[in-house]
Image 1 (cartoon, rainbow, N blue to C red):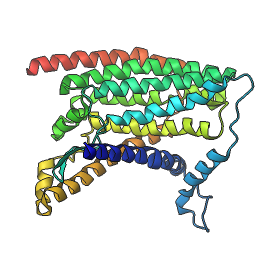
Image 2: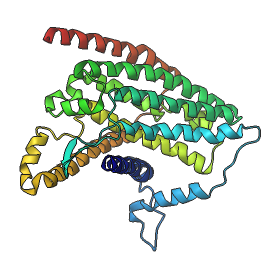
Image 3: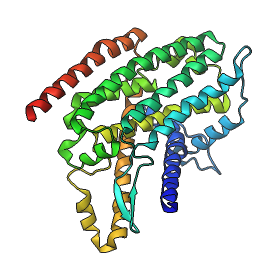
Image 4: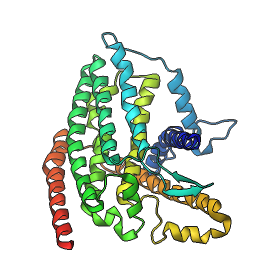
Length: 358
């Protein structure tokens, strides 16, 4: 029992360390540098320690210090309790989602079976959608509690946009469930050990629709109407500063990692290397013994998983700095008149193909 508890604690600390400790701060630098490269600029390079700039990486530390030391301003007439709670409600679901996301397979280490997922739920995919949808409350409450017209308008946009695209996103996943016959993310990942069973090949339309709906859920360009600076200042977090603003900022980047992880598990082969099974890898390192070979294969497959996540983060960044913002009516039209009917067609076609093949 104590061994299982220790393993679970290590997995929790690892996920929090990777998402909050690494990806969240480093993506603030990636956002600046990738946009600078695409726009033929230098990008962030001023923060330094003893004259060393480390290609701008010290800006991550500078940003954190700035967030911690800025004044926490609450506007007059605002609901102080809800104004304080809303950033927490927004950021916690983004982290909790990783509780059911496997970042590796099963390995035998010192005669213990180690499954690289914090909680291997049979309804893991439903858990992801249920928890992720809670973040909507944080954004809506933030706008309403700020006692600011622009913030309220941003929160109303947020509610309508996120609820609209949650419907589409849920329906795009139905095809994946039909193909793999499970809502358990570890099972879906294990099936994709066969390269030709990757979700990208079995559900190509679902892949593109889920990617579009996920970006819309995260409210990033071209779906950033809830925080459109040229229209409504900063939307739902206009009246936020300091660490509270930082939490909204951090939740957006953590959600990018979450999107990359879910896309990897459902469509991109999870932790598997194309045409290389886990058994083959274990056979290559058999000379290290059972524990040694399993540890090495585990490190390789965890590295493969996060490499794929990084690819999807790069893709989201590229889209963000390539496409212009959609008008609000265009976003609603895309969700309700294009993606929703296509997702229903995808379910129908998937069902017909499964019946024919069976």
